[in-house]
Length: 185
Image 1: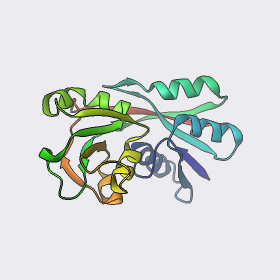
Image 2 (image 1 turned 120 degrees about the vertical axis):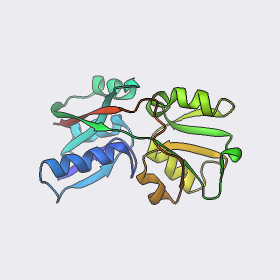
Image 3 (image 1 turned 180 degrees about the horizontal axis):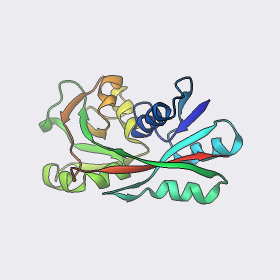
Image 4 (image 1 turned 135 degrees about the vertical axis):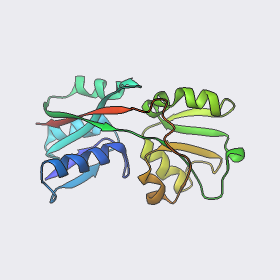
């Protein structure tokens, strides 16, 4: 079984996919990182993947707009919906300190979930939306993004992409739940 997820390796959607596999006792399935909701639903509709998992809403950040747009363009059924408690980390290249950081980037949803933190702690930093939290971490790790950039991403991205956690659990609300959809053909 192939399960496509919105996000790169290390994303919250990948974490949601792993949770889904565990809850349904399907360890032999593969998680395929597809980065966007559009790619997930296109792959569900074409039969390239058996199930697609993507976020639809966050308790703090609201509706995931890109998912709504993708849902309007594709034919699929919702098999299940479930929540995941989301904690955002501020990740940097090894050796970088707060004084080095000029830019903070992440997926628009993560930026929304951390907006008060960003206003309070990073008022001078340029805030840049990115395609995916984990993709931002990957691109920082491999040099696509400047060393003076910090990214908001899941904890797992630090170990996967060789980054350091500058600050933990930076989301504005202690309880920060994202609802994920499991889509099938």
